[in-house]
Length: 468
Image 1: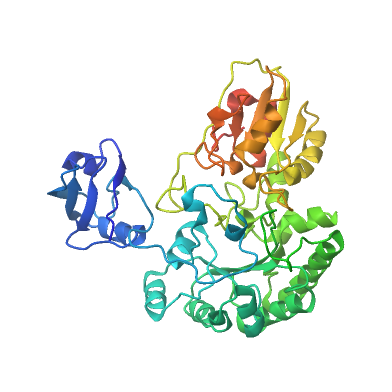
Image 2: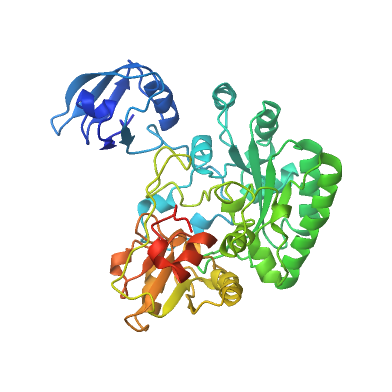
């Protein structure tokens, strides 16, 4: 099993005092070899640690003793979240976006995982088709929640057909066991027009009420279809179909409220944008439990942009986008770990320089009314996603190639604001970096408050934690 490698050591930490060094590989902690960062953190909470490390190219082993307070941080960062092999997905879903990627991208983007540990750490959605009794025992014993489960359909035959895996017909038994064990679980239904919408979606929402009423939330999200898809039966939603999904979700929210006292199910923002319908009020999202799954993001952005307080301290938060979220640039400890955000990059321009916001198709639809209400001078540069094509219009899937092709025709001397949602570190999905762009850009956190500050008071924006 590959050993985790130390990538950073905090100054004045117990790890530094003990002589640990960047590049050391951790072989064992108090005689145990951790299999993932979850187990690692449990082990390093001890007040005494005997750490066996491998140092240097010659593979020299060294024992290091660390004395600290129980529960105190050791002060190191490691190279990965999972030290043994990531549990890969054995489904063959026609709508899986990994099957819709072009050749030649970073190798890590092509890894299909179905690992409950990455669900816990990063919010990845798992189908539970590779879940086992031992996994359930560990989750319940260590209280590894919240977890995120792809449901897609509650009818066993329909679900098995969607996953193209006979285990899909029975794997939701693990969802019931998790919920019965008191684990917080958020669900997702990816809706494919003509396949699991309409009466199948109705049946799924009814099945959730009957079989999984303890589910914390359920997101209904549209199929994302790139130009590289080879599935003849898949197509994007029409505006009429999007409106029908919004109506179905609204009706079932009322049913859930009458029975459970909460709405439980929420439609993705893309549905309202495609249908041309207004978004529900902020309170209708009940704390934005699936904010990072693209549900309630627009309303939370508008609330923060307009200066209203979000329903949660520090802004809306919840499910972290699992797709591509863990493979590059993510902290090994998961989304709950402190992370160094990309600070807004400064240009040697006056504050009166013309401002432009670079975003995707959906982002432009959201930003235009916000900018108009705020009466700020800024123009929108909408980048068409030619790289992926299809119906891909979210800013998070913009590539450097498409952004560069637009910026090279833009004038110098302007301030160009770029949402950090399209970056991992400073790289786009296609490997292009911010430094490769033909115009200098200011990378701005993708929340409403930060964008408002970047537009009106850029001198006060210092990163994601900027305050007015």
